[in-house]
Length: 108
Length: 118
Image (cartoon, rainbow over all chains, first blue to last red; front, side):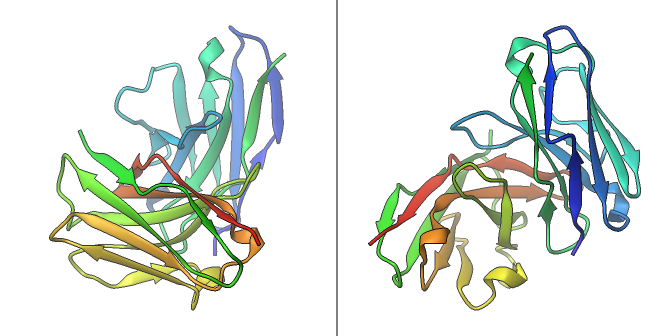
């Protein structure tokens, strides 16, 4: 099983700032099948990034993903008020599918 | 637009079982994997297992082996997740999600809260 470790656990930033979230895998993610999700309270997760760097349909270009192998990053270039939420990385290259523990992005 | 609509909230006694449904519409059903993911209160996301309806064979996380059964009915475009021998720590929101090849869990249901309490 691939263990995903996200850092930091909580990130406190202000609107307009840049956010950088990290996800490290215990072994290489097959085909870089690494996704990022955003989850707001009371809502289902929403897919932001798939294949490590491809934006899902309708996702603004301030969200970008990068990385390969065991190290991945989600960057939000300029934070909007609606971006403050919990973010999860997830690998879907091998079974079992696994999620990171999440990064909470909060308003400073 | 693909939509996944799940069955309503459930309250169950410890030791009982629950079966949650997930009806798909707006797109093909049989060739796309459906996964089940749960989230305990205030906790993260946990994959339980999945199924490709046209193949019919489910894949389960080891943690849930023997307690969970995932099935799919192609005639109604509905997937099901049954969890038996419920415990209080099974209290969670259970989500279904449709997986597209190379894209991952693209579409999600609204979630079903299952509360296990005596």
